[in-house]
Amino acid sequence: MERKKIGREDFEALIKGEKDIAPYIELDPVAGTYSVFGVKTASNPNYLVKAIYEMYETNLNRKLSVQAVRNLFRSVGMGSVGLNNLLKKWGMDLKPAEFLMLVFKLQHQQGWGSPLEFVEQSDKKIVIRTKQTFESQVMNDWKMPVCGIHTGWIEGILIAVTGKNWFCLETKCHANGDDYCEFVADQTESSWQWKAGAIVKGNSAITEYIEHKPLEGKIKLIDDPVVLMPRFIFTSMMSSLKKTMGEMPAGGVNYRAYMDMGKENVEHYKKMGITKPNILADMAFAFYSQMGWFKIIKTEWNVAAKMKTITLEHTAESEAFGNTGKNVCFCTAGLLAGIVEGAFGIKVQGREIKCRSKGDEHCVFTITNKPE
Ligand SMILES: [Zn+2]
Ligand SMILES: [Zn+2]
Image (cartoon, rainbow, N blue to C red; front, side, top):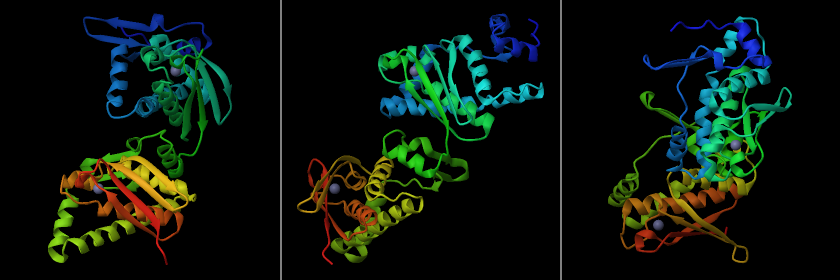
């Protein structure tokens, strides 16, 4: 089959609506090729889309798995920079919003949902909507805003053609029972603060911001270098300290060391511009939890007794030690106390009052003011 030559006039006709993509679809079943508008493609089967959402859902909740899909499709959107350069070469200088509409015209006519319409546009804000997207139909049974493919795609396209950061929010979704899927894209700074805030509010998982370069021996979590450690570091450290100083002092040393670490961690957040004590503390708890240290069951605040009680499931130490008949979470107790000290600027005492390793259901910690 001879390949059609596609030029500027074809794109112009498509943008004006004088033509659609139908005459530009070339399917060669024998060769196993399929191209649309001169670009090699393949159909987007709904089971593939469903599988992507469900793969993320295995480890995340549904809201966060939509975000993970968005992250994935941001990269897809960034790929549109090639088309943008080609059009520029032909002297077609489209505004970012016009280019966005062109890309989606090409996609939607290939089965990605109803046509998109403009609602509003300015240099820093673009609002578009569609009766339904492909993913809003496939994921309809989730009954919530599901269009991570489109939000990510929109962000990627706009980032690629403007060189600035864009954030896209789906404000209405067909899968959530709305008349439209509506996307609001804002040009925003993507600061450390903004990302960390999204994690604390449960709008992002830290996995969205992990940059792992295994072959270079580097891992970053929102621009901060981090390392992966085996959990048995706790048992190993404890037995090493126990050998040199005995069990009780070893627990005290661990408590002290992790308390300093918790405090330093909060200091780092302060340097990044976070100031409110409650947010500082919640941020540290959310980060350590998502890094695998524990799951927070609940935190209670007894105003009269000036005591904070924190209940945790599977702390790193209780999991590492297993059942020992005693409290083992000295590091976690120190860490929690350090976080509270750093965040609120007070002196506190952290104590583990129940421990999974002792046979309790959860590890429970109290944080109380330390008399000067
Ligand atoms: Zn939607
Ligand atoms: Zn414990």
